[in-house]
Length: 354
Image (cartoon, rainbow, N blue to C red; front, side):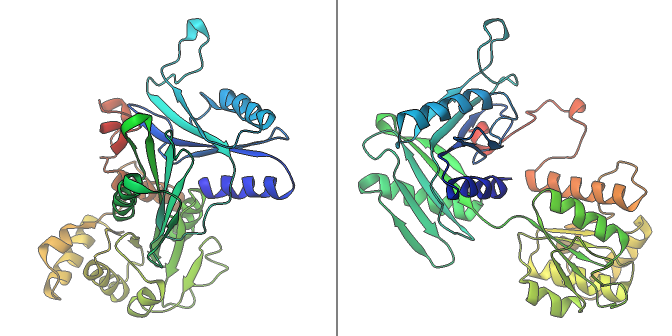
């Protein structure tokens, strides 16, 4: 989780250590970590985060200590390709390629949503351009045509919530890091599956909220893992949560007085992922009620119901695994099949496909 790694790096720097930060700025084919992943090294020998799952971190660790010894300030771009086991060459066993920037740690702008453009190579090596989407503010020291290119790339990164890297003329690489809130799961129904779902989502670094107007159910004792607990009806809770298209809604109450308006409101707000627990017969009856209340066939077709992947889940924890797995597949545009039965890349990214 990048936030945790950056917080650790900040703590090391605050106590007086030199700190180096490595960032994945480009991948090709099957890379084990996505663009934007970070790995931090302190002059005391500590490490946090990951850029490859263990393939190249040892080499980066050595390079970081060379950086400390040499007092380097400008970033360097390091390339790793396929490993050669016979030659004991550092590389990626998965067969992909990876470009990693390495530079002294610097505090990043406090952005909730926006993007930061980083330049590697050329006469503006190390310069950045930062965009804060909440204030529509643009700051940084990029100049000329490169600034114009960076502004266009930043706009794309904010719109898609996806980081990217582009090779420009004269050996310049432009890396644009997308900054946006962590994914959020909003659960309607403070049942045992909701607690398991929030607990597991928390381990992914995701945000969670539980909504249930039944005050006997919606207690912190029953829902200790959720970030936010609201004992109000969905029409009151959604505005308070500022529910948006990027959220993932899961309805679990089995009570049509709560489920129906919770789903209908979310569909009309354009929430991208709307999941509903219940048997196939329950889904059919609910869908008919939603049609009769004014929802369209297209809207109802977007409901993930019965919610979750078909993994034979029974217990609340197993059901939570099935639901989270479906949400992850939805976010990545994958089918949720067994990897053994697929032929595509295990770690596909827009950058890799390009």
